[in-house]
Length: 354
Image (cartoon, rainbow, N blue to C red; front, top):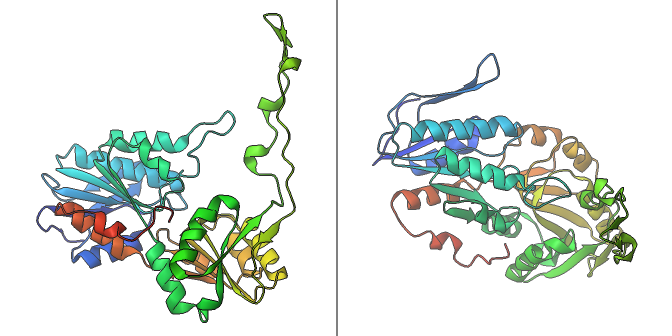
């Protein structure tokens, strides 16, 4: 593409989501920077920046798409290339931050989101723009400012404009941990709230692993380990709905939908309780593996997700998937950062719970 510059602003993109990058650039009234990002024959990532970045504010647009590890390497190499070419500042625009689900310690694992944050900062990023982090505490993993944008205004607008009889709807939290987000949606739409409680399967964090195995040595310093109090095992109740959904439209809200099993199970229970139409609404639509097929065969009527991730293939596999464009808020955040304007306007009237 032709060189793009306007007052020292340069927008470049990797291969993870070229459609979103073009939408953002078009809203800014600029062209994407001339950058070649490709895999060599030996599978190493190569980046060629074909124009000067010296003294410019560079915005690197890359999201955690399906080929996530290649997307990360592209992002790191693009950032480092700009840093070593004397860019004035480098801002990572990462609508969906990869590995954000691995932001808590699990068994003998690691907090991978912290590792990724360290890598991004070390590569040369001065600022991060992202959207609806899986856990807001992830912002603390970075040593640079992080603007965690919200998709809720776009999703609320979709409900009001595209769901007939939405005033007869009830907002549903898929589990108690997502009740805070659902409550925010319900209060802003003046709708009722329901919460699904109980599990059909044991979550990954509760599965038996090596930590539950007995130690080979039963005594230490004269004390028996049998004296230690034991945790009472959890007893999962059957899946149930707290709240009235009979004769109502049920709108399940969450921050992401990856594997569809839990959403399909929730929809089945809502249908049994009398909901006559069921929507699933999330910011990030990963829709991994055979999730599109399971949704297509389920009683879910529509799945509404934003375009933080590409999902052309998923929409081809599932006719129920709808996309909401959030490029406007990303473009505006880039403009405000470039011109040194306050970002608070983008968060006005957006509750912390969203």
